[in-house]
Image (cartoon, rainbow, N blue to C red):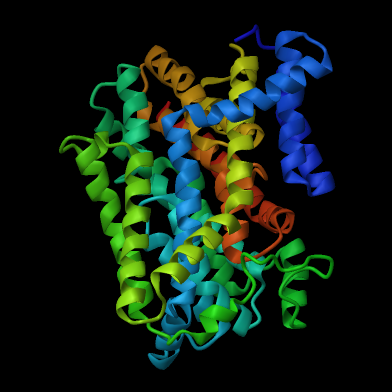
Amino acid sequence: MIDPSWLSLLPPFLAIGLALATRQVYLALFAGIWLGYFLLDDVNLLASLAQAIEASIAVLASPGDARVVVFTLVVGAFILTLERSGAVTGLVAWLERARWVNNGKRAQWLSWCIGVLIFIESNITVLVAGTVARPLFDRYKIAREKLAYIIDSTSAPICILIPLNAWGAFNLGLLDGLGVDDPLQVLLASIPLNLYAISAVALAAFTIARSYNPGPMAEAQARADRGELVGLDVVVDTAVAPDKAAALAQPRAANMLVPVLTLVLAMPIGLWITGDGDLLAGSGSTAVLWASLLALVVISVMALAQRQTNLEKLSHTWLEGAGRMLPIAVVLVLALALGTVAKALGTGVYVAGLMGDTIPVALLPAVIFLIAGVIAFSVGSSWGTFSIMMPIAIPIAVALGAEPALFVAAVLSGGIFGDHASPISDTTIVSSLAAGTEHIDHVKTQLPYAGQAALISTVGFVLLGVLML
């Protein structure tokens, strides 16, 4: 890593600016990577282009990153197999027969409840909720942007509040590595202080209860009221368009419930196995991949047993489904590569260093929250932000003789806020895909909500700082 300077901010800001201005996420991300290596090694543009390409490919050299990319492709195969087995239509019909979902508000509550109940992994949460609720949102003319917002707001925020998953394992590892006494107790104590996660989940519930549609969301809902699924200038992608093969399958709610239950239950089992009996020490990426593969096997066996398909058609479905997720896999690879070069440039360290030694003690939690938010927004990664900010926040707490839970909560809240608002975050991107909305439309409609939750959190951290420090 070079000595951090203001130049380290340019690559992520270029990627974010281009993504918002051009809607070309792939080119925007790669432009940020290219600029990053140009600044990092002080070479000409052609040589830095070669380095940017090699760095993007090198992402797959990390077993954890490679597993995440493969998981994305497997989930694509899983979703399409679900759809073509009649799972989605079957569940929707069952919910309507049971009179659980018979209007737009209940469809929104369904997506919110799925997000709260499936806390194993953020991307699994949004994919399940989006797949189940999207047909209901379309039927009752609720904007797909609203669905993307709800599932995004109940994915990472819920995962961080219920840390019996890879998120908890990761942060416990960080705290243990920093010498924190009883990391589990500190992490659990930080949960009620995690103001952004709590605010994001609560605001999503308020939005549903009160039909709250600020700014761009009101425009999106107006389009939905006119029967337009997405913006006038956006064509519905084949990944979310109605599937003709699915229409021919016999609707069965069990084809959704059994594989999804398998997915949810297999995750902690995978964590337990990879952690040698310690759930919190397991490999999150491995457990997620195992769970998704097992769920794919289950729905495939069910489809074969029900004579819905044969092995040849099933294999084509897997490949087609994986292919539909290829764009998101490319974005994930580029986002990881951008995070790597941003770390090498010291982007996070530079932003953290801006705090200096002149900030009043009572304001430190709020400042840490905001800085973590800026870092996560810039690099599109909450976990990367945790890695950058925990080694800064914990020593501050120790130096002050303060309870570290408040500082841990500020870091976690900031990471979730920046990740929630960032257009280059994987969860934001997957939420767009799962809801079937154009990505930048999701970002624009979600930002007012994220900003309000961040404002509430900032005021809350100031008050907590005054009361606890």
